[in-house]
Image 1 (tube, protein in one colour):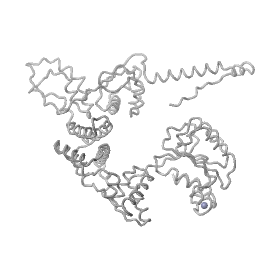
Image 2: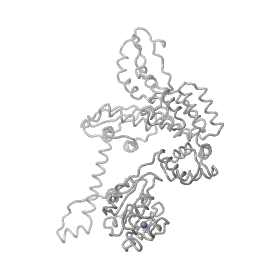
Image 3: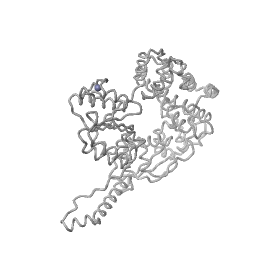
Image 4: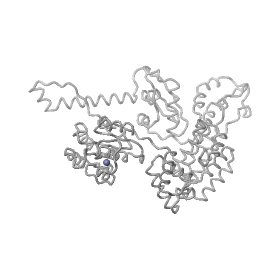
Length: 538
Ligand SMILES: [Zn+2]
């Protein structure tokens, strides 16, 4: 981004509107102000403003008359925007350009965007817009298309902590590197947050930054607890697990934060299992993470992660926080995935069983929806084999030690299109979903109908992806049946097409009945060439 902007400034190929996107605190408005200096520095348009001329110093001090900073979060109204833009046509008073920085621009009202659009379409030569937002998706396409867009990358904890180190070295403040890593992690990608935490830490630590004070300042979960929890889980030691949880309660650790920290740790373990080099070896808990990555298999880590996330989501619903937290741990203990899916379903050779397939399905843990589905269809023929003698319990395969799938019904109002909008789903699996009609919902099973013309979408791998996305959404293993129908089905795509056709018809009727249009047709022999409905915002 710096390179692109520098080149543009050097070669004087300036755009009249820029859009900076990125998470909070990564430096959008800081870059915007620097750009304002680049444009207005008295030494000329330059990628390296002097920093000493009156334009540069006034911009730094926030009192340069031709730099207008607006916070859309507090000025969303159209009146304000008109007033601002009316002013844009006058030449700058002190500088070369009038620079408008509009922060959190996605917060502007639709009307305000529309009035801005006129100025963006034909901007006066002396006006530059710099828009900043954390949420570019909320900006109308018409505005986006007139801006040169730059995305500021989120800063990694490493980058943040090394920058904090430089700041402290320059300020001659003593610090422990581990303390900076804690701050960097807590700031989650925002340099602004990191710097303000650093400020607090200096005050808190009486002029120096050390690990212990930062830990207690941030109320950071002592990682040792988390390691003990995971070790107890790996060993399948329920007593040790609960003892650890009680100790955490005794130290009044916030369980919401604990579950978050646990998920973060599991994420780290999963990373290390996949890419061992991902773990920087100066991390305080380096060896402990490696040990756990070795003890737990990848599947278990995935499962624990999922359970931790869901446990955190449901914490508010638990009778109390400790109950919610310990239930989450117990669920991890109970849902130990069984290695090899076959053990879940295959009856022992020579032991034909008349048992209905249902228990096997119920036994399938949340992490193994594939196994659960595979067992459903082929299980039927087994029933036709007449058992030679009554089946006794001992001949059955060992039941897998798994708790039942929760019996509560899924929360779903039957609005298939609305549900799809919430699913993380892409490619052909999404195509399958939008070309399907929801036929029925029966417990955890969704039945879909797909028009035969789209039968290529009903491929098993796409079904699997869709079912996984549904499982993630509802937080449990879901079942899916897809059947083909001849002719049309009431699919989201069809609903959308019909709605579009209705809007088109409505627009055409409105134009045809418009007295002004009728006058034009009658008096000037005008002809309506094309009618387009105004796009409705989602
Ligand atoms: Zn200057």
